[in-house]
Length: 471
Image 1 (cartoon, rainbow, N blue to C red):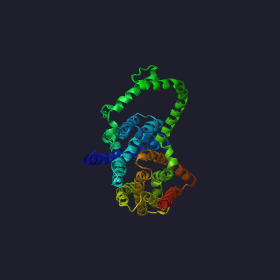
Image 2: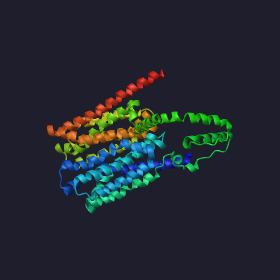
Image 3: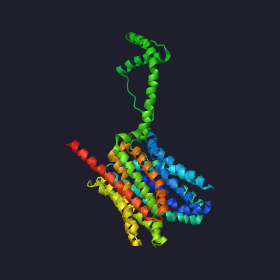
Image 4: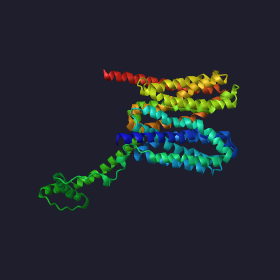
């Protein structure tokens, strides 16, 4: 692939990745607008109704390891296309739901799985095209989710007011089909070789070596048919040896089949990435930190408005805090790339430091008593979230290599999905036993700081170990 073609394809891939992340993570996080509509239509409890979006967001990340296996087996393009079709199909099926439990399956599982299938490869493909400016392009592409959080909620509300919630979801399903279009354009740099048919492979000219191999081929027929016509007398002795070894070969077939089964199992473990945890402790560190960070992140978003309103801030001002988080998160995703690419800020150290800033801002929420104070705290929180979430694939790429990025990112997404599901009920349990939202934010802030310290300790140990090996 020539340099000019790679530049043009890379530009196309960056745009497609931006759109896919806009229509997956930006879309699924914005669907909380439909919560009130679900309450009015299904006439069910708030706890059961809130699980619709919770399952959808959690499933988006929970299927991460499965997405990594599919990408390694089939490639990026088919997985993204399938994800777009599945997510749009789930939205359409949701319009026929008559009970909340049906929405758990149609929107929670089907649509959530579709967005997960499309989102993961859109992150991986950036690393296939960009090396020198990988961090910058990754930040720009991941900004799609932040823009979705800022733009989609008011757009969804306008559609609901005009077409009601079912009509709005049908329009959203049509919009989501842009994911399929972008998936069709997502060709990895090595797809040309992978797509080449067997008939297109170059053929070799005849040579003495080829003639000799034809005699071997004549002899090899003996194993399958029991007969052979030896045209070369020098090969007759070899055929006799083959005949004597037939019995021993039958005895070894059982051993070969067991070895083959063991090989298939090893290939499965290698494809799923489970062995990466043993060979690369760094993946375990990233899995644990992202799990506890996701618990805090979702809990903070769910109980943000309730906490702020409880101290006298109006609901309109409280909702504006989400806009602040979205704008600052977008700024963090764009700015962090130039900081990492300058070479003075290691990605892992940037990940740890911004986890710490996010944790400190959440720990200070309980002392907030006015909108300006909360605005400042969530400016810091939003910017920190934009940085540390965007730098996750950068850290995995540097720590595990490009060849393991899809698999490792899938396992990290699994950790995020588990945290997204567990975070709100854990924080809700703290409120039930204390009747105070302050303990919720103390918990989530502490978890972020714990994650920051864990990553910082690993970074220090890894730097010390590398320096010792170098000396």
